[in-house]
Length: 343
Image 1 (cartoon, one colour):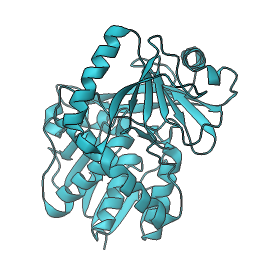
Image 2 (cartoon, rainbow, N blue to C red; image 1 turned 90 degrees about the vertical axis):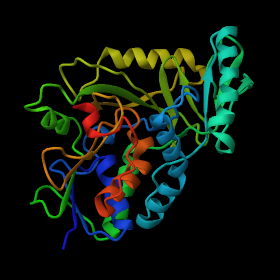
Image 3 (cartoon, rainbow, N blue to C red; image 1 turned 30 degrees about the vertical axis):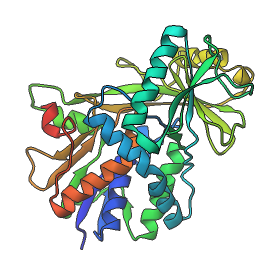
Image 4 (tube, rainbow, N blue to C red; image 1 turned 180 degrees about the vertical axis):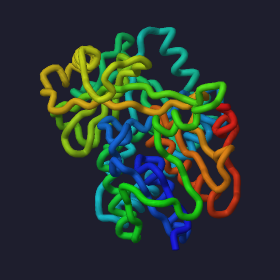
């Protein structure tokens, strides 16, 4: 007997399925395109925190999720025998000038208060290494909370863990038990149908994969671009944010501009060959926060959507919150994340 049907095999659907299985539920996953076929099949995978100031429920939720991530992915990888590519190696960011440095120093103090002993945000002199961004001020922001992973490998690791646990991923099938809709952009369109306000929309992103071995190094954030040294000896760079687009999965000169900006910001990547390009459309809820909770018009149906840019970082905590809601009727969804916040 199947207790739960998950519609959508992206990062939210797979993670919620895993959390439900861990709590003893029987689960089936349905996705006509297969696992990680949409925006969750990207290549960047930056798990980066919000700035430690102006604290709110979204930032607190993200902090909890980032701190859960290492244990979450270790369990997934151990269960299925596939490495998700997760590593918490921190992040470096350049500083433009003395004013920006003073702001970064003040954020060190707020990070001590908000992150406590869990992680550090600090200003350091630019080290003499190859793997660093150009910093006009001669200093860098370093934080130890940021982590990264390879999205495709993470989805593969979840599929392997779920398969080992007896979960089927089907291309089609009837709903059985409670139904969780984690269907990305298509789901936002369906939720918006017949309503006076749009519940969300798709935002296209483009990213590239370079051949450069910086395994174990921190991720970089420079020129508005995430620069991720994956554990397979590649570096992912991206991504764009395009509200208007003609071709959802094609790359163009906007990605060329991203690559050029990265080569300028990180001299070590000046001659690194481009070995892959990716484009996809990511779901952005109207509130900009993930959208979680019961479907207002459908009894026994739930929604987990809108993980624009932060879906992989939020996934461990979202999986925990949604499985508690579905299985135990325990609602711990924070303010700003509820479906009704987007109505």
